[in-house]
Each structure stands twice: as structure tokens, then as C-alpha cells.
Length: 268
Image (cartoon, rainbow, N blue to C red; front, side, top):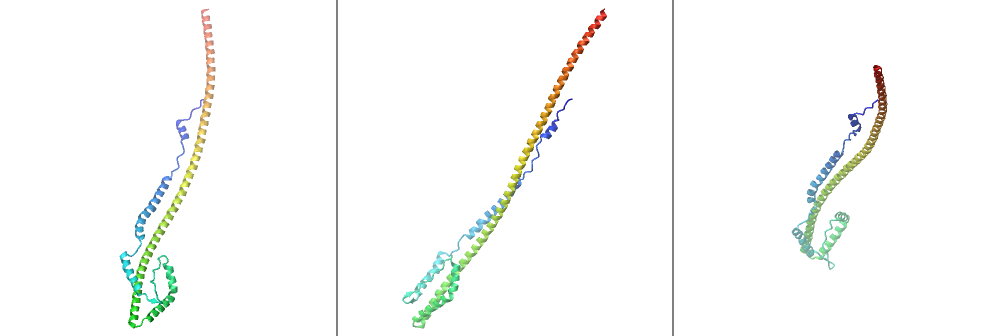
């Protein structure tokens, strides 16, 4: 009995690898590009324009400062009354850093301070003899307080403008922070998804390699069994052919002897 070899189409189907799983790397790359283009473009477009307007400090011009402070200093130096042989020093402007705390302290101490100033003013007026001198002293004091009030108003406007700009900068920084947090959240989610995808690909690769190895071993074993069967059948056919050849030779000898006997009979 002959054993037929499998066809080439069958062997090709057996040796065909599994179809690859659709790759999602392109989708993950596209999501990453979307995140980077969205948040990096927003920060690049919004950042410089707003920072340029917010980081510039608002200050008075030097000439305006000189005009506003020099008359005040001169009036204060000239109009400071002598009390017990000592001059009353000019008031200094509080630092911007402690403006709010200083205002609270001033509001608490305001009645007591005003009472002290009124007392000092009354003592100064009592040292003057005529009403004209007292009126002139009051006018100087009023002019001094008016100038101080104007400077305080200017300083307050500057501080209010700076406060507005700081509030805008704070809102801008908070918005940038929220965008950065959102971008970080999306990037973390994308990284987790990429890790899961890589882990899945690795497991699928290992499983596919294992299946391919098993199929290769199975096909190799199948071919080996088929080759052994063919070799056994060839040996069996060789033995049968040898026997048939031997039988044919014996039959030829017999036939030759019969022909010789027949010829001898014909001659006799």
C-alpha cells in the first residue's frame, strides 16, 4: 500500500502564522500629539502676552515723584513746630509689604493718635500770640495734611492697580496650573493605557511563539512519521520486488527446461 504525501496547499495552511492583532500604537501616539499640541500651544500663546502686561511694575515717573515729594518735604521741614525745643519729624510712608497689617494697626490706634496730634497742635497754637499766626499755622498744617492726603491717594491708586495686576496674574497662574494638572492626568492615563498595551503585546507575543513552537514540533513530528512510513513501505516493496524477481527467474528456468525437453521430443 502506498502512502501519499500531503499537498502543498495543506502544508501552507498548516505553516501559516496567526493573523497579527491590530496595533493601537498609532492611536496612542495620536492622543499624545493631541495632548502636547493642545496644552503646549495654549501655554505658548497665552503666557508671553499676559506676562508682559503683568510683570511690569507700576511706578510714578522720577520727575513726578520729585514734584510730589519735594514740596511736601520742604513744607514739613519749614512748618514743623518746635515743641520743648525739638522739631517734630516728618511721617514716613509705610512699606508696601506690610501695608495691610499697618492699616489694621492704624485703624485700631486711630482715635488715640488723632487725640495726640490734636493735643500737640493745640499746644503749638497756644505758643503763638496773635490770631494771624495761629491762622497761618493752621493753614500750613492743613496744606501739609492735604499734600499728604494727595500722596496717599496716589499711592493707594498705584497699590490698587498693582493688586489688580497681581490678581490677574494669580488667575492666569491658576489657569495654567489647572491646565498642567489636566495634561498630567491625561498623560498618566495615556501611559497606563500604553503599559497595558505593551503588556498585552508581550503576552500575545509569548503565547504566539509558544503556539508556533508547538505547531512546528507537531508538523516536524508529522513529517517524521510520514517519512518513516514511506521508508518502511519502500523497504517492504523492495523485498516484494526481490521475491518477484526470484520467482520470475525460477519460472524462466522452468520454461527454458520445458522448451529443451519439447525440442528433444520433436527430434526423437
